[in-house]
Image (cartoon, rainbow, N blue to C red; front, side):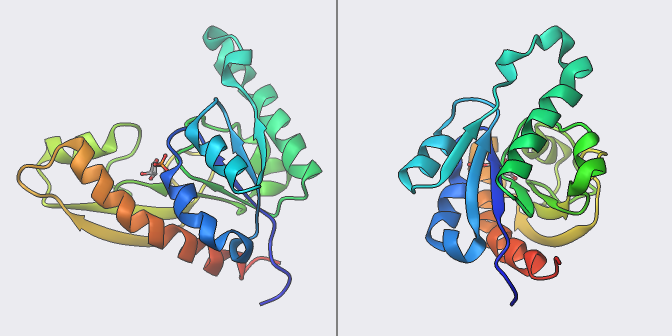
Length: 195
Ligand code: GRF
């Protein structure tokens, strides 16, 4: 199996995927949880004794954030290097990172889970988009993140049926039930392939 990788989980919200990974945190090698805003995900990490970092988006002027995305991303990169992180798993992280992170060592080392069957339904609000499109099946996708959002090699996918009375809440929760199993499994498999 080799030396366990040092994994950072990136969160912005409720952190239920992170929470589901806590029982496996040592096997997964989770040594850091990083957030872009104060959130429940950070509380879950602290309660589990995992080191946390908050790199607040609100420290940046929202009107100029696009121009400063590189500075924001470099701040994160510095933390990752300082913690000797090998692999990042975004779990509901709401900030798009600048390509500088991929250029400086993290190409192929950032994973994401997306609540739809890529390449269908990219972007935000994808659970709503699936309901509005009237599809009978949607699901989730674990993929390698690249500088192009919601692109990158697909590692795993699972389908979830859309039920006639589904709301965004009910459907998203059923998708997350699947992600809570698929994501840690895929992270472990992918980490084992890394040098
Ligand atoms: C997941 O559905 C994931 O696919 C998406 O954000 C959600 C995270 O949920 N990117 P939570 O914050 O872990 O509950």
